[in-house]
Length: 58
Image (cartoon, rainbow, N blue to C red):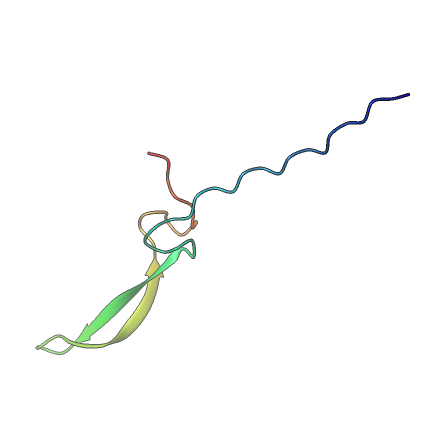
């Protein structure tokens, strides 16, 4: 009788980036005028993970 092989384990998921919660984008406030009124938010790339969504292991 042949021995059964165990199914391979899935690779562990990398930890999510903290500032962007794994999305790769962060919201940046947009300021307008001399008084620099905040008028809205603009999506920008996360500088902690460079848009990958994975936390660095430093």
